[in-house]
Length: 291
Image (cartoon, rainbow, N blue to C red; front, side, top):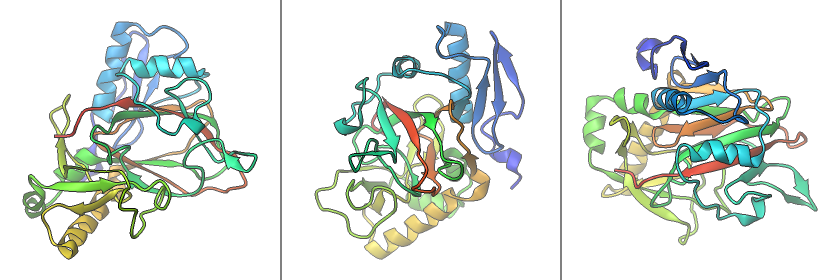
C-alpha cells in the first residue's frame, strides 16, 4: 500500500485567517502555523484548527510560551477538562498534571517519570475515556523521550476482511494497574485495578469513521473468546496497528504544544536517560462512552 493512501488528509498547506496547516507525515499529524495561543483565538481560526484536528488527528503548535491558564483556555475550546485523580502531580491549575522525571526529596514531581511506554489510548480503562490529550513541553532531554502516534483509522481500514469479521461487535476489557504496569505491558495485574470493556472497533462521533480501539499496554482480553484465542487475536491487532506506515514520531522541542484525538489514535514513548530532565504539562479533555 502506498503511503499516500494512509494519509489523514491531502498533503498540502491550507490557510485562512492567518492560520496555516502543514502535514507532519503521510500517516498522521499536522503542524498549525501562525497562531500564538497567548492571544485570543477568533471563531474562524478555531474552526480551521478543529477541522485540521479532525482531518489529521494530531496537531502541533511550536514555539509557544504558555502559562497553565493559557494551556487550559485553549483546551477548553474543545471541551471540558477531565478530572485529575493524581492530585500530587498538580501544581497550580486543577486541570493541569505534570509529566516528569524530576525528583524532589526523592519523589517524582510528575506522573509516568521514566523510560519507554507501550502504545496505548488514554483512560481506556474508564467508562468515559479522554476525548483528547494535550502536552506542552517545558524541559526535554537531548535524546529520546519521543512520542509516537499511530493512526487507528488506518489500522482498522487496512485490516483483512476476515479479521474485521472476527472483531465485529466484540468488546475488549481494558485495565490499568498504576503500580505494576504503568508504562510496559505486564503479566498479572491486580484484580482491583480499574477496568472497563469497550468496543474493539469504535465509531468517531464527529467524523463517523471507524477506528481500531485496542492497545498493547492496557487491553487485557476480548470478551467471549477462550484465553488463548483472545491473546492470539490481540497480538495480531497490536502488531498490525503498530506498523511503521501508520506512525509519526514526534521529536519534542521546548515550547511545543501537541494535542491528539484519543478516539482514533494511539501513542507511545521512546526510552530516554534518567540522568536528563524531562518536564511536560498535560491536560486531558473529557470524552464520551465509546460506541
